[in-house]
Length: 404
Image (cartoon, rainbow, N blue to C red; front, side):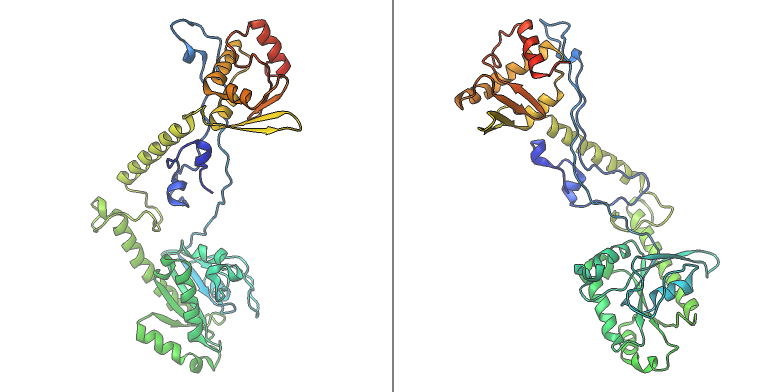
């Protein structure tokens, strides 16, 4: 959901969510402006004039805006393991790490992504994510595909596991590649390695001849493994580490290239930031300035008041007049009704804005209920007059239950 600009009374963009449609927080301490909080109320010093040196008037704080947001946590792993159902992804994760995912001889054993830390290299750890099986149409949500694929967006490298015992291994390969491409361009361009699984089954070599030929022709790196027998797993991990190293070096140059880091081009803020790297100082300064700019725009949008912009809704059965308008609703909510001068100010606004004249032209009667925001008033002929005495105000305020 986005910032409610109609409620703020402005067409200006007042949050990053308005400008981008969705936001991501990728770095520690990163902040984004979603909705603007309410203004603080003014004290009596703000109402001093040349004739009123010590005004008995103050405001309460304005209520902030409220919105519903959908927050989405994407698992952060170095490598995502993807493939069709029952390809052996969870078995591979168990072979790579100490993770204990549920493993069974039927599809969709894995219902949620699993993480495992691989320490086979000795000098470094690699985090693998086992993504539940993908079906054709996963990019549209079939088989909870969207719930699973989003976790792959934070992975640096993908390992596509192919069931070597499948009736059509080459078709499975193309189906998964298609789903990745249709879901997200960033997924389709990630470096990946193909792992043909279940080579311990004699028929697999014959079944995967077409796939092997296609991968060799297109230059795609491929490993033949048996996850259940732990065969070919170590060479796969070494290849993954090699691809990771190249990827991280490329990201490092891209991130710092525009700031004397040895690379060319600008900074891609949407890319993955390698562990231990912070935003360049210049980028941090720019982010802070953008945050301040949006705060100022939001302040301007929420403080702008046009009391002539209101609508009247009459409920004849109860003789109730509902006043709808951002300026009036905000004013009534922030007014401290304990003060006589607050009532005088309110009555002046009713008169100057034309609300009193509009009510009279529509046939308002003494004793009718006037509702503005959460406040209700009983209308009388002096609501928009300037000659309301203190005693009359006290009686009127007590009758309307607005004074403590």
